[in-house]
Length: 387
Ligand SMILES: Cc1cc2nc3c(=O)[nH]c(=O)nc-3n(C[C@H](O)[C@H](O)[C@H](O)COP(=O)(O)OP(=O)(O)OC[C@H]3O[C@@H](n4cnc5c(N)ncnc54)[C@H](O)[C@@H]3O)c2cc1C
Image (cartoon, rainbow, N blue to C red; front, side, top):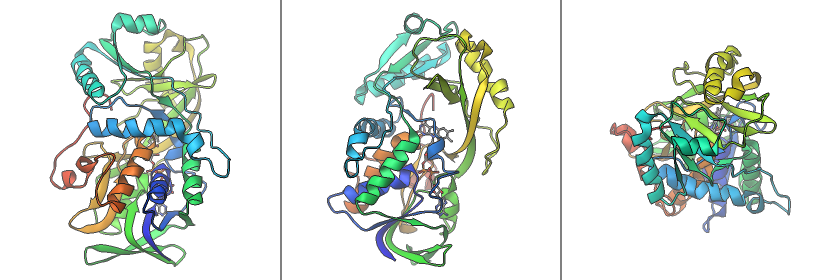
């Protein structure tokens, strides 16, 4: 098989790249290689579904400014033969809350967000109490609410992008990449477990938490590690007013889901590795105290369900690495290291990589600072404040 662009990994990122490569005015031949069409261990279906513009890096805000309206139009735009996906985008808002010591950083980010066109509301402690009467606010300095953000169904996003990319002509190959052939600074062919191979002009590595294994096949060492994270479902015995997606400086992050709530507390000290085991004590020991301290109604809550999934954690600066391995493998593009934000940024990144490959430069969102050069040169490009 010979294509213009081969994409390794058919999760949200790979499927988005395929969609934008096929819907570009100079659409090219695209193959997406995905080893597991049931996506059993993939990160996308295990995501919490939060989508927000509350970032400090203008690139991350630009990605959200592009992606969130895309999600709002998703069901109509991704329809195939009149059949619409349903991603249940809920514009329930996103709220960051911080203690007094972090108010200055929150304020700085609030100004950056406003300057980048985000509709954000500054909430003093008393405003937080007035808006969310059940919330314990004594320890808080302030909050920022982004009312146009919210959450959606990650599996719906994945299936919608995949089906639309296929309908537009992208070929999905059910196989596993086991090797890469390199020839004079170019990646020539992808070797598959079935014994077949695919030749491509350009190759995108969208293998998520497995991205470093794919890079290693071409001799490229990247600082991306699989990091286990739990998503819990829990309910409250007592009613709480409607809540947005809430996130604090201790990494507590949760949102309404059906009759209850979905969320968790990512642990950055988690040993890296492909570990999907669930430790049911974690909710009781870490998540529950954080919830109960914020809302007394959670005093008696219990974990009803816990799912584990992997972050593709960029150990260097927790910002994604987008673009080619310039100077070494000019036609090998990395799209990974999303460190917990890959679902919400999939449309923006898909569009950006399609432009980089087909137009030769970024047109809509400039992700040059997210390129490999910063890692090679040791320049961090990190979020400030809540990540
Ligand atoms: C608990 C949890 C909560 C999260 N919450 C959010 C959130 O609220 N918002 C948000 O934006 N993000 C969230 N994320 C992060 C988000 O899930 C990821 O950033 C995103 O799904 C990454 O998409 P991906 O396509 O790169 O990876 P994946 O979905 O993992 O896709 C990669 C694919 O590559 C395939 N693959 C790997 N190796 C090979 C190979 N050798 N050959 C062929 N195929 C291969 C895999 O089978 C997989 O399907 C969360 C993650 C977790 C774990």
